[in-house]
Length: 301
Image (tube, rainbow, N blue to C red):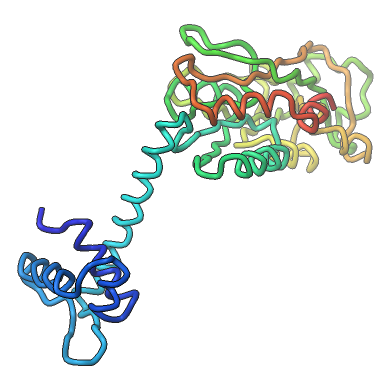
């Protein structure tokens, strides 16, 4: 390869500082060394990179193309150097966090903000997952940490977990829905006559999970709990919602809670990660999320 990062640094310095001499001062090199680096690169590539007819060194179209794309390489190289140094100290270059749809992102943002104040160098990538999706994201190596993974650890998966809390589910309908006024508990036969609103599992590798509807019951499948809530508020169907999500709408009278002939118990939520992952960023998030008071209060309803 004829193009080097050193040559790109020289081209970048000339463009930023306006002359070969100024670039030499910025790079702590004599002007002749800068001139040699440019001429060698031009000879190797077979193109002119600078128009030398004026008083100020000006990039040719070929030079502009080289520098525009070359700066991405310089930035990537700097990032690689920094991430390598961070790895030596135990801090990950990137932490991928799969968050269950039950957990509002708004509650995680203050935690992420505190993390940046402590260690702003690790990149954070947040993924949204539904039902078995947080477990699947770990199994499929899409995530390093799962937040709010529901239920039990999937069979065949070796993971470390920490309890996050429990979620209580309530069966709710819009006030104008036919099930809002019939005697309780609402029978299974009555439930089968009405559309259930469900969310779609985001699992790719593990078996998809489903809950909250009966065999032969018509369903409307939506991608998120927010969409499910909106559909039930609109009277498009019925179903179970996390009590923490439905509470304000029940208080406002926008939803009505009904007792039904289906028992859906509380579901435990977990933090989960692979046992071989010991990075500082992961351990920081496990400790801070598990003991975050605002998140605990929300899950408690």
